[in-house]
Every structure is written in structure tokens, then in C-alpha cells.
Length: 122
Image (cartoon, rainbow, N blue to C red; front, side):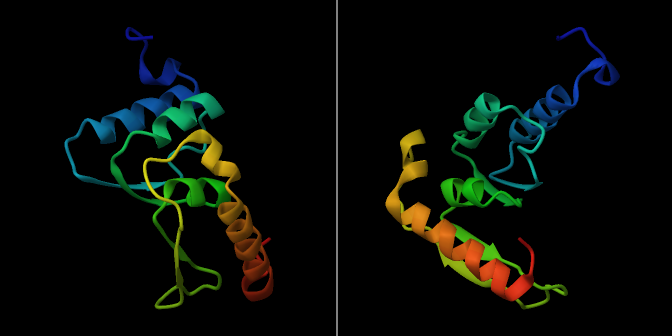
């Protein structure tokens, strides 16, 4: 694919290029909006395990729980000062089977219920 022009790439390939461009840019912190949304699950997992500090927006609760040490939950616009910080209770490094860790499953259920109650989002 190295000789392809950007307009010749699929959406997932463009997302990979964009993500890699950000990673190789040399910054210690990356700020991304839905960085893994257009990627297949194998590429998504590889990108999630990059080991770099990310500040990102996602609507995927499982992804947020697996990747994060801290989550800021926004439920009602406007978001100015209206958020809850959740600490994810897993140590690092994380492994794929940590996605099924009982504490993460419980926290996911709590977050979904909270979002239903407070924001009517789900």
C-alpha cells in the first residue's frame, strides 16, 4: 500500500495512517477523538497496546475501561464542569483476558446504568 495515494485507501487504512502519523510525531501525549472507530478488531487491539499516553474521546465503554487508568464521564450537555472521574481498578500492563476481569465487568454495568439514569444516553 506504500505507493497508494490517500484517496485510494479504505477508511480503515486512512485511520491507520492518521494514527501512525500522530504516534511518530514524537509527542509524549496524544489527544484523539474516536481513534480506533474505523479499525478492525485485530488492528484496534494492536493500536491500543501501543503504550503511549492517550487522551481520547470514545463512546465505547469497554474500550475506555480497558485502555484507561482514569475515565471522565460526561452525561449531560453542556459539559462545563459536569463530569465524574472514575478510576479503573486494574494494574498495568494489561492483557487481552483482562477485558473479562470481574471488576471491569462490574464497572461497565455500573457505568451503563449511570448513563441511563443521568443522561438518557443508552
